[in-house]
Image (cartoon, rainbow, N blue to C red):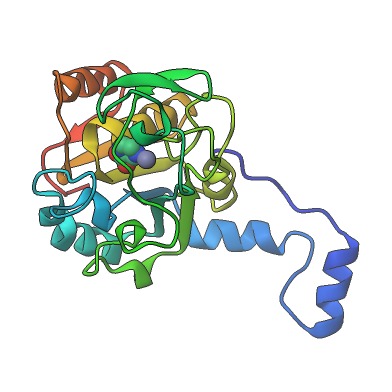
Length: 239
Ligand code: VGL
Ligand code: ZN
């Protein structure tokens, strides 16, 4: 299995022994085998601003909520991601003189689309869709919180170097496969799937659990890139 390490005897183990918790050298290995988790469900950016009526609405974005909730209920490891930008984030067109939303510009040295202001930390638009079963999440991962850098992928920010920590989280939970759903299929879901595959996770995207922005052929491009990277594109939710 991917990345599982054997624990060693440590002062921490001695401390847990003192208080009676079931932690001994080797105990985690046994527990890991017994719980044998393989696939994590990663729900990408199912936030109010990406749904109809939101600041960067994806057509029909809210339609995926019932299916995503069902998948969350069945998943062994449940991760929600949230785009989480400080006010005035450099990925907002308004932060660039003379630029309009959907123009291109540089954010942290990376050329990308400049977006309408969206998912500002602590605002209603940054909240998860109100009917998303966020209570089912094991882990909520925020990304894009650095003022000068965007993060489409759940694994690396757009400089392709800065990790979000998700790889370590999944690896330490014994995950070797990732299923993705969420918004937007041609931006953050695709970036996350491509990184997951590159990192060595068996990766699939559950297409009915996604919706796309699809500007200038971006959806066709994203689907081709994912296929080329060995990402499985599922037309139905079945495993
Ligand atoms: C996203 C554009 C900007 C996404 C995030 O979650 O797909 N898209 N920031
Ligand atoms: Zn964003």
